[in-house]
Image (cartoon, rainbow, N blue to C red; front, side):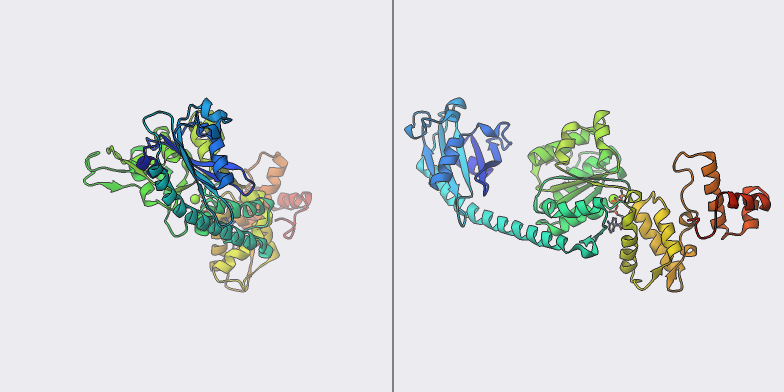
Length: 459
Ligand SMILES: Nc1ncnc2c1ncn2[C@@H]1O[C@H](COP(=O)(O)OP(=O)(O)OP(=O)(O)O)[C@@H](O)[C@H]1O
Ligand SMILES: [Mg+2]
């Protein structure tokens, strides 16, 4: 659109796509300054519809007096003078309309402008068809793959909990679209995994996936990392440097820990998202980058917005689609599948997990989520010399069981858990346990009886 506006001298330009249901959607609407129009609905839809219905171009030098459009309120209302519009052909029907207008006598469109647009729209039409076809194929392919989920996995995302299934179900749509995605979840819940799957399965997969760990940089450094700098912008800037945004051009930009981005940089991010433009530090030249943004956070952004620590407008921009990954302790049914998945990943599929060990895996509350589970499986593989993983092969914090301080509880409950934990740690050596607990073996025996504990039911 920018090229068409520049070449013809138009005041505004819009690309309107018509869906299979016949609905018109303004995909791009720009002005001469290469900015998005604030009110893209203020173009003449009468002309757009006319073009779509007849499949013929429209050129009018004075729309207000043109008898063909005498019933158009938008022309009068928005004071539009000259308009040129051409349909974008598709294989079966018109797919959309390229529209240019001018509201002053400074520019009156001529046959020459129309000819230019006609040459332009043929090429655009072929390109659109191709993109649409490719999109449909990708979508179809992913949808079929996700249906084949007897093994409950999709592109390396394992789980059969409702939460994971619903993520897997919407992913094909998310992937086929190109809108910003926000992924929320505690540390180790798979945020980056999902981001990479979205990138690798989509149309941008041949271009770079650029992750940025926002929390890892102090504010001024983060800005130059993201946007780059010009030579001399600050001491030490000895040459021009490209930022990560430019590096990601055409690909996917993964902003991890987005809550850590300081407010001034949030403002700049918003500008990139709205207009696709940014400046390198110390540079006056505006640059463009076409990136898909995926953000991730382990904090509650909505709350940060309420506290004024995160820009509300940026929040709405980045969360066009929001994916929430619940902590592993809230989807324990995924644990056995994940264990199987990691055994396979480490080429130890033949290893079995004893019932006692599995009970421990399931009862532990996994503060480090799937990452911690993966590490625990890796630990067990190293420790286990036989064919069956048993409790003694697991990392100590998992064997010691539930974190007794994780939730408020009664003194009696606490005592019971503490006794279980100690017994497990000592391998049910009652003498040792009593020593650690500072009670007599006799008292320990009584308590074991009182709480009905035995080596088998204590996990
Ligand atoms: N559903 C899942 N299926 C298979 N593997 C998973 C799943 N979720 C997470 N993982 C694995 O767990 C590990 C941690 O995941 P990832 O790095 O994506 O977490 P994260 O949410 O980005 O964590 P952090 O907030 O700490 O950066 C990775 O090795 C990833 O492949
Ligand atoms: Mg991560």
